[in-house]
Length: 72
Image 1 (tube, one colour):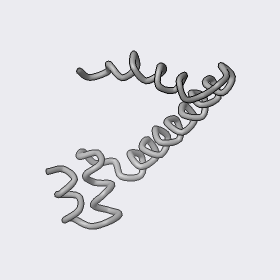
Image 2 (image 1 turned 90 degrees about the vertical axis):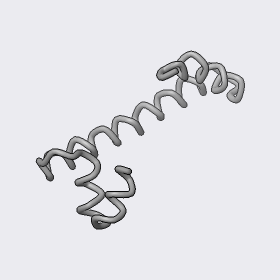
Image 3 (image 1 turned 180 degrees about the vertical axis):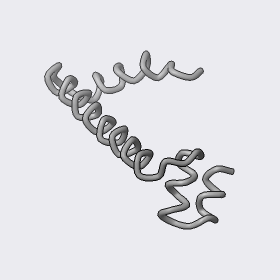
Image 4 (image 1 turned 135 degrees about the vertical axis):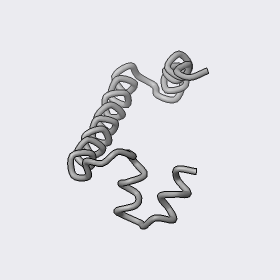
């Protein structure tokens, strides 16, 4: 089921870390990491304003074969 990980993930993190402060720090760092990825994806979308999303990004970086295989 898509999205169910949000109900299971915090338990695993909480079991591995000893204090609530470290749990919040881990989630905060994860949020910063995800935000950086989203900003990168948005910047690439502005740099290559064509339809196709990640196919175009991979094609520009690595060529048509890896882009096709990623889409496939």
